[in-house]
Length: 557
Image (cartoon, rainbow, N blue to C red; front, side, top):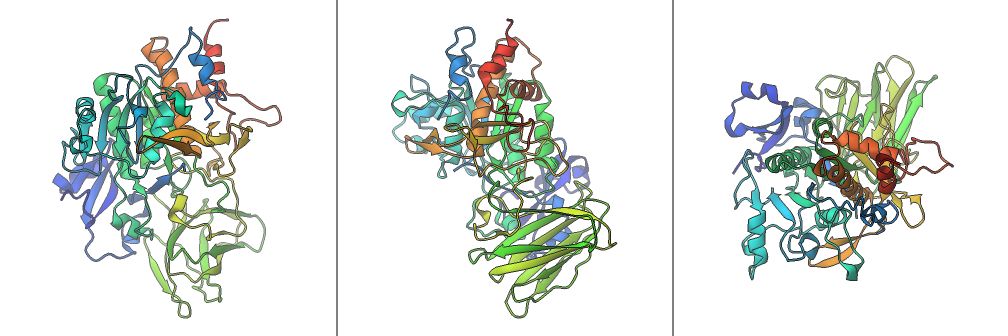
């Protein structure tokens, strides 16, 4: 079995420039110019392998960010205008998600042929591996059309979407219209590149104390999926818009990290657009912030742990130059005593009276940011209110953020008692140049309470824009239709509008040098802003997307 698929190996992020110094072959998987994966045997699993290897070397874990109106964002006005009539024609849209039900009419032309140019299913190992990649199966347009004409399509192209999230996102972005269902994707003449992500390795979930029954995806596979989309688009010499409707609360929320850096790079190149969801962590009470400016220089965090959560992790990120200790107390007041920052130490604490085990990595500096990071991993915690005392070692002012995991990696029974809804945008939504999309209810013009809020931990303006994201009509597997709500659905809607911009700019040759960042700024400039608010702000970004207004500004008066 390939090591990238083998749970007996950790996949560790390394700098690609260092890859030749290791024994290469199948020990290395190339991701992009910046990063590669080093596959090392696990042997006897130990939570303190995270400590022996740095936090930033383990890929983050990503969860989905979605669970009808086209008028609100001006799409119909543009498509009904004979001088504009942009439908995404000539543009590729890449959905990196849970796969697609390619048999669904939402992804077919009027003659029944497919609108998908290519599928890379990372979970199927029986087909042709894509060129320049090392696993999975690639299916071409011709193969998909052959399957669609067969009595048993899955015997020819055996890729499915058992989850349904990827099918929904792809259909909102560019689905073929169906008048009976009152359904139409934003860019219904765009063509698809589909990447079905394999689930995260059990070994990676284990190192972060994520239950094995939780569905999540690892950062390295999203990087590979993005590179695949760019590779296919380059081969066909067509612009591409990548949609990522997934997110993670891991990391320093500064816009840095292997996936974020790669997407940022792509967005600055002509012909590449990237739309990412802001996340749905706005009202989950999973973020805590404190700034202590006066004595006593400590802060007590109250964390309520629910009965369902028998294992999970928590991260605390501070700002230099402060150095922080942490003292963890159980509901019955059994304590670890202060744990001081070190370089690579991982400490294990077993509570005598309640059977709880906690692993603590109090790292002086995390490699991506240079800031102190404290990682707590709980196993079999006693339900109730836990107390975390954060204290400055030098008796000086300090501030810090803390985040619990995103999505359904945690139940609603675990949360911070004095939580803060701000700075909850999930990665890669903190990335500087990608289009970060939050969701609003297009029926009443209110922001969805679940939508994550900005800014980044370092004060960068995010989200960029708000798009419709409440009960959007979508395709679901089995030739059915349903609805999707959340910032993932909003990111798909905005990605469709990006495809329209690229059609105007590149396909129709109005501005051949159009980059994703250029397109983002055009969308921001054309956004609708409520005079009751000041913009940009950490809830709406620069306002509500309005593509008709965008094109009105581009055309001569």
